[in-house]
Image (cartoon, rainbow over all chains, first blue to last red; front, side):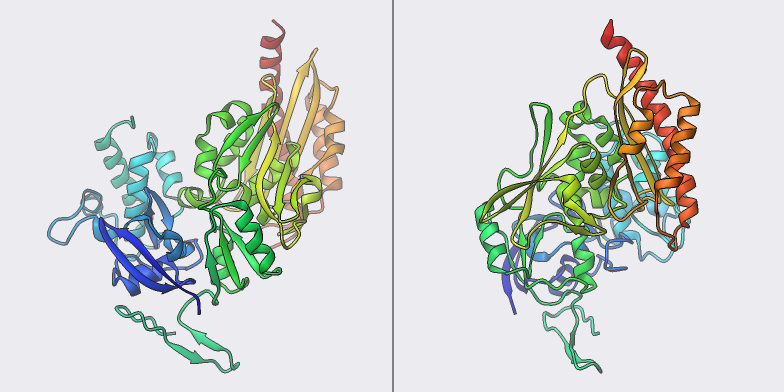
Length: 159
Length: 318
C-alpha cells in the first residue's frame, strides 16, 4: 500500500493527514476530515455533486486525488455559511427555492462560487451553459437560474 | 461496501469472485509528482508499461474509478515547470502538456492565431471539467468524438513525445491510430502539441451537434480556407464523431478548392460525405442520421468560413 502525507488548507484551516495514494479528494474530505457537506453522486465526473474549489477554480473532487491537492487551498460548502448565518449564495437559493432535496446543492453552490468570480454571466443562455455541468433532479433548474441571475446582477460586471 | 464517516479505517471484504473488495473506487497504485521531464521519463520507463501519466485527469480518473485502468504507478506532471505555456513559434502555435482548457479558452495567442480553436473550446465539456482538463491530455486520450484531437489532426498538428530515448515528433496523421488508441510507445509521454497558426486572412467554420451542451459530438465539421481572386484556396476540412479517429478529409478539400463555394458545390460536398463516411450506429444516433447530420453541418460551416474569408480576403487585398 502506498501512503503519502499531505497538508492542505481547507476553508482556511491547515490539515495534515497520511492517506493512501489512491484516496479521492471527495473521500478525503468526507472520511478523513469528516466534512460530509461535499456530496458524492456518480463518482465519475458527470453529476457535479462533489464540486469544490481547488486553488481558486471549481473541480470535481471525485476526479481529483487527495495527494494531488498537497499544498493546495480547498474551499468546500462548509466554508460558505452556517445554519444560523447562511452564505449569500445559500440565501439566494433559499429565497428562490433553488433546492428541494438538497443533494446536489453543495455542488451547485461551489460551482456558482467559481462562476461569480470568473464569468460575466450577462445572459440567461450563458448562465444555463455555465450550470450545465451540475445535475439537479428536483427543481427543473429554473429557480437555480433565477438565483444565479440575481447574484450576477448584485455582483455587477466583472473587472 | 461500507462508507463510514469519521474514521480512516478502510473496510476490506472478500467478494464471491475471491477478489479483495474494499471501500475505495480506484485499485491501489503508487504516485509520484516529479518536477522535471527527465524524472517523469525515468519513472515511466521504470514502470515498464504499467505506469500512467496524469495531468488534468478528467478522462483518466473516471476510468481509474471504474477500475478499467489499473496502473501500478501514477506519474503526475502538474508540478513540472514550463509545461503550462502557449507560445507562437514562427507559424506554429505550441501548447504545453499542462495547459488547461480554461487557459486555452482565454488565451490571446489562441484567440488571434487559432480563432477556430477558441470557438471550439466553448463546446468542450463543462466549466468545472475545463478548469482541470488539458489540451494535450485530450489529444493523448484520442477520443474520436472530442474537439482537441480533431483540431490537432486537421490543423497540421504534431505531437511532441518525450522519453529517456529523447524527443520524437509524431505527425497527427500517425498519432491517432484508433478509438482511444494513440501511437505513443509505453515509455513516451506528450510534452506538447504544435499546430499551424491560421493566416490572418483565413476564413473558418466550426459546427458541432451534441444532444446536450458539453456532451460528446454526434458529428462535428470544421474548416479553414482562404479567398484568392474569388476562389477558395488552401482548404482544410476536419471531422469528428463519425469515425474511429478524428478525420482530415482531403477528398472533400479537393471538391471545394478552386471553387466559389456556391450552393451546388456545397451539395456535392454533402453527397460525397454521405458516400465516404462510415460512422457507427450506437445508442445516441444511427449511422444514417450521422451521415445526414454531417452534410448539414458541412454546409453551415463552409458558408460561415467562406463569408469570413471573402470579407478578410477583400480587406487583405486593399
